[in-house]
Every structure is written in structure tokens, then in C-alpha cells.
Length: 234
Figure 1 (cartoon, one colour):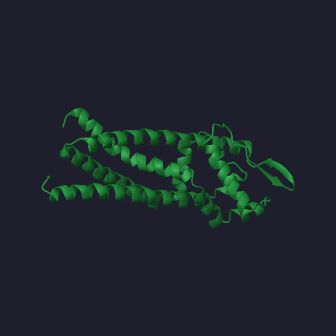
Figure 2 (figure 1 turned 180 degrees about the vertical axis):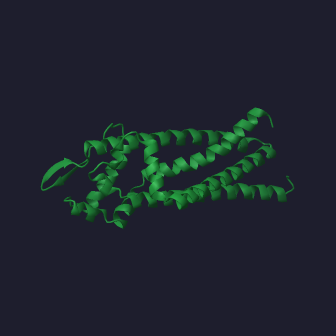
Figure 3 (figure 1 turned 60 degrees about the vertical axis):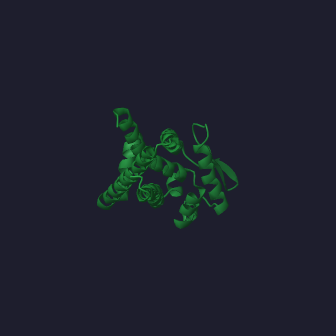
């Protein structure tokens, strides 16, 4: 295999784990079900009521839906209003709005990486699937199997890190790495709406989604290799 072919093949192998990761993050950021799961599991409405803000489950769902809408909008800063004692006020403080702007920036970065890796993966796979040469298709299948193995290995490494350091420490280091200001810990309703255990669960769901995707892709590709071998193609 010539050098350009080797480079494009390895790019494909490395793009698949990134594609699975970014798809998982993008899906979580836009999952109203996940937000509803969080506020029901961790009694968010009760914590808000204890702080003086009583909201119905429907009103809470509207807040999370508003966040999803903001993340996908062209707005710079979020503006969500709620009523208390018959008066409307901004739910988030200026510091919290700055943090949500930073979060939105990461989400849009995720979208861009997702789009780029998806285009490359589809282009590379399409070229392999529409060629008549069976050997090229088997190379593509081997690449998918290898990429799935890399994905599962990385996930295993992250699980070991979580076991050694704990989610709280990893979550803290994530904020230190990706945010340039301390507003991710700003006092207000943001931390009540998003308790830390919620992110632990979200990470678990995302990990399960990535593992499922890697196993499914690897299984299909591995099955193809076995089928062609039985037919004497290899």
C-alpha cells in the first residue's frame, strides 16, 4: 500500500472513535430525555424550592428545552425568565450566562468535529463500498475492526482513570482544561439545575453509547470478514 493510501486509511481508523465520541456528546447536549431524567432522579425541583424558587415539572422541562434551543441558536448569551411571587426575572446570573456561552462554544466545536469526521468517514467508506475490488472492501472492514478496538481500548483507559482518580477529580480537571474562567462554579440556579451526579450519569450513558456503537460496527465488519473468508475470498 502506497503512503497516501496508508495515511487515508489511518485517518479513517482514527476518525471513527472521534465520530462516536462527538456524536455521543452532541446527542447528550440535545437530549431532553436526559435532562428530565436528571431533574427527576436528583430531586431538582425540591432543591430549587428550598432555595426559594418553586417550579412545576412542566416549567422545569421548559427551562431545559430553552437551554437546548439556546445551544443551537445564534444568541450570544442565554436569557431565560421565570416567575416568582408574580414577577418575572432572569433565571441565570451574568456569571452563569458567561459559563453557558462557554459551554455553547464547546458544543459547537463538537458539532464541527462531528461534521468533519462524518464527511471523511462516509467519503472513505463510500469509495470502498462502490469499488468492485473485494480486497479494498476487506481493507475497509479491517479498518473498522481496528478502529473499534482502539475505541474500546480508550474507553477502558478512561474507566481505569475514573477508578483511580474518581469522577469528581476528572470532572474538575476537565473544567480547568476547557474553561478560562471560574464561572463554572458560579453561585445561582445553574448548579441546582445540574447537580454533579447528573454529569456522572450522563458520562456513563455516553460511554455505553460509544461502546455499543463500537461493538456494533466492529461486529458487522468482523462478520463481513468471516463471511468472505468462508467463501474463499481470502
